[in-house]
Length: 358
Image (spheres, one colour):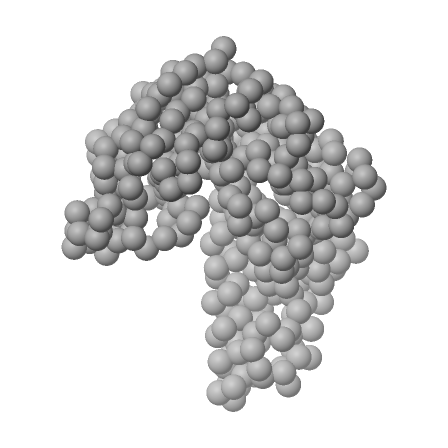
């Protein structure tokens, strides 16, 4: 867990420092535009990727981006992590215990997952949004998964180009063999993750559906790969966009609310938000059980759309997860009952530790 977080020239924060005081829950409050979400974004970058907004680095640096920025964290075990961007650089850089390190090495120290208001419509938006969200969760549990999905997208583009260019059958077969193998690996990882996650879920259940997932559920991985390879060979007449064909790039995730006996997309906004939080907290339990690593969970506008009972359930769940939770909200009052917390106030880019609650 993070003991201290220091931001320098990050968004609207000139210089800010947060002392977590060893608490599990860090509650950040303040008016709109005060820099609450920027703090969560800074924490998210300590996971090694571009952060929960996926922003361009020069947009993150304070003012015009010419001076760069830095995010520094001291962890509970006294490991020091830093991410920084300097004027003139094209990429971010990382340091671990003051030594230069690849950004990917940061994930060995912190597993970070997040929910933002963007995900509030996850269950009613497109399948591609749900796929991206769940694939991010699968990747934090099975680290090669993100590489596989990126590789699949590249191979599908290469196949579409090869078809339009009139490539010979041998070249196409070689491409399709790679696509079939990696697609089955992706589908198998999704099925395995959903099954593992469901063990930690009480109020809902996750499923994954798609052509290759169906092949896997009705046979072996070898059978699924063979069937999909045959399918690709039979679909060569479709030379249009890669999304015309079926496969792991078109699979979808479903979530069922067991309390209401309804698919989640048919429930209210507040009920959907509650299930989203349940999913992320169950994920942190899964990661802890399987990897013995603690997660950092970021909840932007954590209690938006939640009624009093849903907030009470959330706070109870926060106490049971093996994770440090960073959450934002407008006022401290709505977090009444959230134990083991430190409250942090934001105002015009300034940060103040104001209260610790046992």
